[in-house]
Image (cartoon, rainbow, N blue to C red; front, side, top):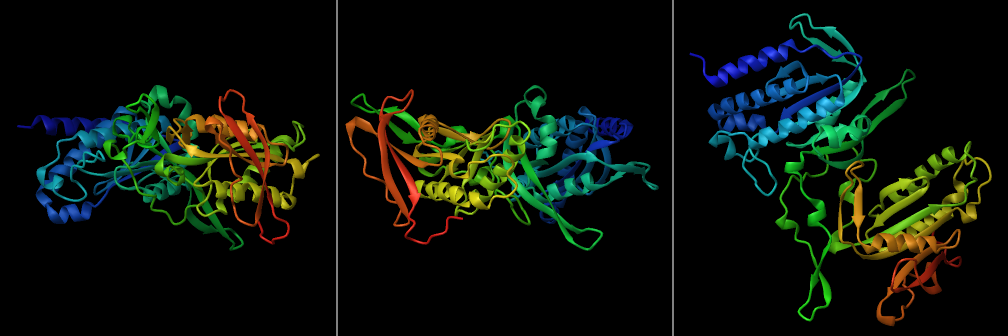
Length: 465
């Protein structure tokens, strides 16, 4: 007599085989179980039960979201979906069900299957890599299943190769198709920007090497996500005398999935993991572009060129500066220390003469206003849409006000003056001249700020580019 589980598997398999094959632009997914070879060696009997659990969950979940099973190889699935929102919904549901499954005892004793409540891992740790794009298809001679080829297939396989067990990765292009529907259709998953990575290299018709890269996004079901906002920054507390003080947040008290940097050939840009947060302090910098001609025909092209230039300068620092957000030539940046932010600002100004391709009238000497402020932040974590680091606390508005008070072409730092104290000019070494510009109240802020401008010391040859 067939058991209920066997009946379910048969029904699930039948529904899966009845799914229509997607066509045109398709989301291709590759999955794989981390450490499956070692698990088979350690506990083969329990591993057979575990693979049945895994396969049942995968088939039920992709059937729920109109997925098409192209093929399986051992514990690895290759699937296709017509729309990426269905593919991501499948992956998120599957990760949650895999975590909640009743795994055999032998699996839970192994490094790649043990229960880790602090990281919300239990049982199989499955990698999910996907990409959405145009494909070509044909019917496989032996299986009768539709199989796919093309760049989208190659990219999705490369993305799966970047994954750690328990991780869902997709490309920025794929995420952009879905991001507007995420809150409504995906249950508010956590989004994390993993930066741009080299996927593979090829040669063109002339034999020249071509590099293929993509910006990668990580998704985690909200129920399994690590709450960075609760774990990073400072919390206000009241002292015994009634005064306000603060304490660092305790990240060890927060549970959720954390992953190491991607398994990458080469990381080409910064990612969320590069955003500074140590000891609840950061240097926030605002850069305002003001020296471009306000011409609708030329300004958009100029802003694209300036964006590339700013990002190139960020990567020259060690550690690199971090881009939190950009909007129409206004950047919010984060640095580990004030001196690095000042060096960046001066390098940005010094290198403008070499930026080519700017159209129309451009005042290169007064292109930017750069405002810099160091101090504690209240919390930080990934932005719900972009996945980039988002900082909260008085430091953000204060840094923006410092930038607003700069003159065109200036790089300025702000020093808060609590209780009427004075501030000495910060010391950034002999290469940088620091000059007091003013002590003033910034708009909407109750305390005074000392504003210091920073310039390169022309007597010392130190290149800032």
